[in-house]
Amino acid sequence: MRIALALLALLMWSPQQVLAQAAADMPEKFERVTAGFDYDLRTVEIPMRDGVKLHTVIVLPRGGRQLPMLLTRTPYDAEGMTGHLRSSHLVDALEGYDNFPELFADGRYIRVVQDIRGKYGSEGAYIVNRPLRGPLNDSATDHATDTWDTVDWLSRHVPESNGKVGILGISYDGFTSLMALVKPHPALKAVAAMNPMVDNWKGDDWFHNGAFRQINLPYIYSQVGTRANSVTWWDDTPDQYTLFLRGGSAGALASARGMDDIGFYRKLLAHPAYDAFWQQQAVDRVLAQQPLEVPTMLVHSLWDQEDIYGAMAVYRALARDGAERARLWLVMGPWNHGGEQGEGSALGAIRLGSDTSRTFVHDMLRPFLDHFLQDQAPALSLAHVNAFRTGENRWESMSELPRACASGCPVQPRRLYLQPGMRAGFTPGATGQAGYTADPAKPVPYLPRPSRPAKRTARGDTGW
Image (cartoon, rainbow, N blue to C red; front, side, top):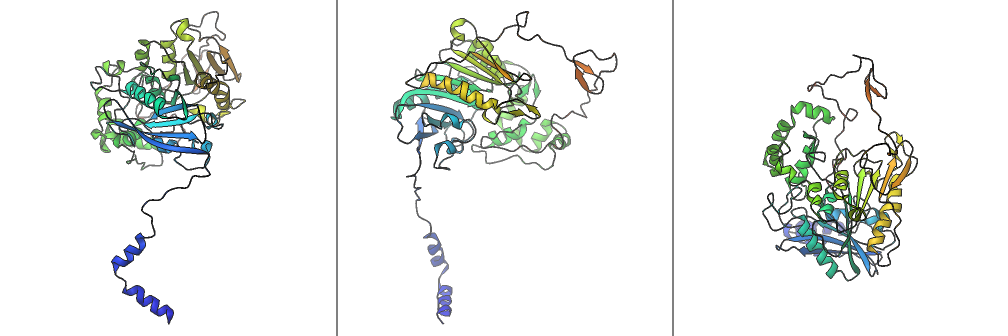
């Protein structure tokens, strides 16, 4: 009887009463309890000189005082990169792209990640690789001014800090790190730019010596189509090789998917040659005209399939004299793009004899940052050039990179020759037997087929 009466009462409720009951289950505002966390998380909107506010996440070791700050400026979602309370432990919350958890494991650094203009939580318009103010940018701001304004705000508004800021980043975030070197803020004490985008026509990202990298289409579609990457490229074949062959051309495939509405894609179509558009924004050319005022570490991956050009071009531009080389460090490691932050004991089938990425972070990156950012600065004995010799599986240290390979080079260059049977070797092949036929209708894939669609990370990386 009691059950029947209860059911009758329920049936007599109006829809509005049912909805009101359901809504009452959710509080108007839910506050997470973080009493057991070993860090505090602060989100701020930092104003730029033109009034635009940039969304910034600050992760502070709980109870820390007089700590330096490590800043990354990114188009890849500051909140996603900082974990945003996904763990009660700081080192786990910072697991992921650009973070290098070992840098933060002992609670001696404040982590700061900022969305650049026009991406995710930041105001303003997104311009891909926004050029410096000048012929290609008639506004009052660029990445150099935004970095200056951000560093200025951080140095004055984070009481837990010692006022010193370092900036680091990989790929696009390596590009924004280099932009900080243009008329830098006095509080910027160190820069670590890894696999940076530098000259996007000669050898980084969009073109490789003029050859358009068609695998960038999915990246451009997602990264530039919306502020928060809310539209994603779709794959309707199990093999991307087949997808591009079926598309007929990169341009036809892009148009079929509506990319003609994306401003940056139209710029690529308008500038296929190495014209002033590319030359004037090439970062190595820009930095060659600037004095190097901030200690800088450049990190180059020897098998970087995406940004193979940039780090070495910037090194050549900055290693001009002894005074500037004294503020410049170069690391050349056996990695692919961004591989220095992963497990570095192998590259595919190549065994490297040690975890080269850990060696880089523990013996090179951390001592460099500690020396220039910590108040009780430890001495720095790091050589200015550290290069891994794959095959011998050892690191070699030098005071500077040899400018030419003459008799004094540690290893002399050797010629490679085409051989019969689609092979290469160190001896000339028999005449007429070593040749390849280039047929545009039958391109050669550089990944084993089937080439699966790339897995995307929070930063929109194509993962190649």
